[in-house]
Amino acid sequence: PNFLLGVLAKLSSKPTWKVAGNWVQPEVLEGFTAEIKKLGLNDQIEILGFADKQAQAELYGGARLLIHPIFEAFGMFGLEAASFGCPIIVPAGSGVSDLFVDGVHGYFPVEGDVDKYVQAVDELMADPKKAQVMGEAAANIAQIYTWGYHAKELMSIIRKAILPH
Image 1 (cartoon, rainbow, N blue to C red):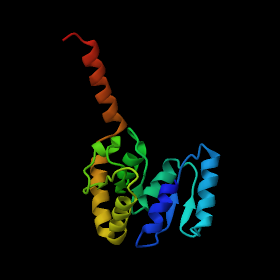
Image 2 (tube, helix red, strand yellow):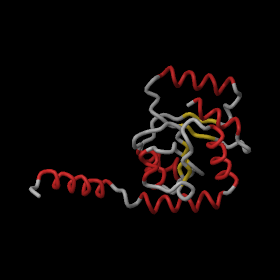
Image 3 (cartoon, rainbow, N blue to C red):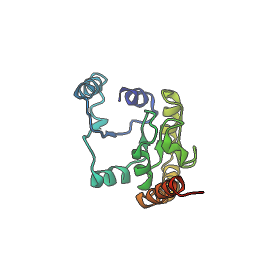
Image 4 (cartoon, rainbow, N blue to C red):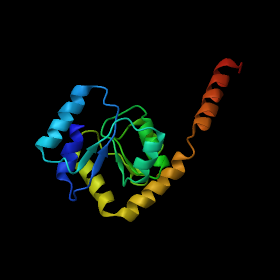
């Protein structure tokens, strides 16, 4: 989470951020909270806990963008955010980035590149219309990848594996 603080410190604007998560490791949350206080960012960052489906709808529906700085093989967070029309900023090569196009549905900078994350966030914060267009395009893609779609894909793979050729 401290990576987010590095991005926030370099932004042209001073947006309010909501940071949601399970906070499985209490010491990570404590360290993050202490760093926020140390940097005087209490007014800009609201720390939230676990977000259920209703909370996700409210958060993603009201967000200009989702930023997730950690590479993941496939994190559902990006697909969920996109389904609510929220453009995503995730590390290049993260699984969810395979479904979307960089610069069309969000941005996929190299993990750890603070300046590229700042550039992506600044661009979407400065241009609400662009963020909306990207978010709508992302939502159109996300609607394809339902649980039903994934179940059919999995069944197809299983059938190919067990049926004689």
